[in-house]
Length: 587
Image (cartoon, rainbow, N blue to C red):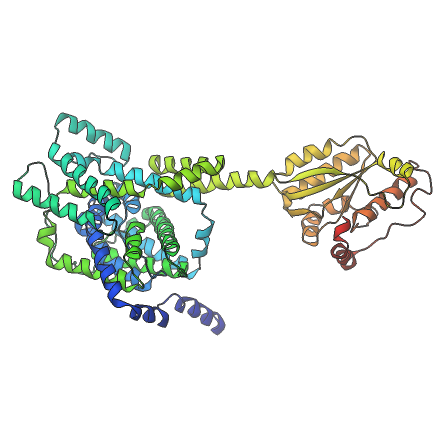
């Protein structure tokens, strides 16, 4: 590697590290950041516990993730407001991984995903998030909300989670088991916690009703000695020592595909969450590559302490912004408060009923559904509504990564279809020039001019071929091509095919206004030579008309003199290109 290349590489990596501006932000208003961080920690505690349980690795894994990943992403991430930790979307992906590979497989997947995220950051891949269409994001969020809600059915009903990784099937089996042995205590706790959270959020949005409801549910079950309210169970009083003992090098090959899925989801959800935070603030924008870098380091470190893969959390990030956070110190404080809870209050946290956590996540799923945004997308266009519905259904029926891929593919196809419809082939009248009405009528009998508007590429090319080859019996067709916005090899091949078909009918095809950037693709497929007569390239439409008149006179179709006795100007190479720019209005 040369010195110059090494310097460029180091500059790219150093741009991903925290700088002086970050330190200046932290010093700006530490009191507000500390208060915001404390509030977010109170909101995050039941969510971290619930998502840890839902993932299959236990509440302690959720807490470890919130502490370790939350701290590292706060320091190295690209957003001043992002709060990271275990999320419902990631839990949805992890459940089948736990079922197939066990807890150690999840930890290995998290480590691999973290390495992939760091690589994406170094490759500056964060900017591509902007190409994800809004209907895909909204459908993705709706599908995740449905999956999270269905995942809580066993806990809310107070039954053991049935075997399987399809949430619809698991929820159905849980309902069947409940019907045989009802546990109304668990149902009452889950419904009460969810109701308090939803009603409280409408009444006083700034109060963390999730922790209030969970504390109340825990006190009721402990004081009343209610049966059927199973607690979380014992939690370690602290984080485990970092270890790589979970790594199974022999299974790395089979875990690469799940790791790609986890990395893709972590990138998507984290960058989406950071964008939401940008929209809630004024004049503050996140760095997408730094965000990927921070999430990568967080996911490399979290498995070392027994944590699950993490992402930016939209709900917790929104709380952070609303409570007045001004820098990344707030997110760092949130992680520190959770660490203090792990060390100081583990025995108390272990008594929280599982049904209460299920109620927290049920309320979270309901609040994830933005009815206004869904209604707006559904009313925008049929294409947007279709993409939204397909993405949501795919999220529910398949998995999140496939859902996003399906949404992107369908959105891309519909966008191509819309662009292709912009391509038009319109017949335009010949310019009269200095000819009399009688001469002009005579020319119009034998020459027809068409203007091609819009893109001529694979999605629109074959419709164009059908329209062009249906030209009535004339002697010369002039194609005005100055308004062709883009052309690919398929478009050029179809154009060549159309010209050859017209020539077999004895019709000469000339072209005017070919743009310089389209000459190469036309020449590469052999279409350019067919569009030239005697090696001439017509820069403007009037020149092409004069060339057509000369051809008709030589063929004896027009009497001598109609052309005015002049020769068609011929411009080649650079002169032709110069003429195209100078005579653009005449095409």
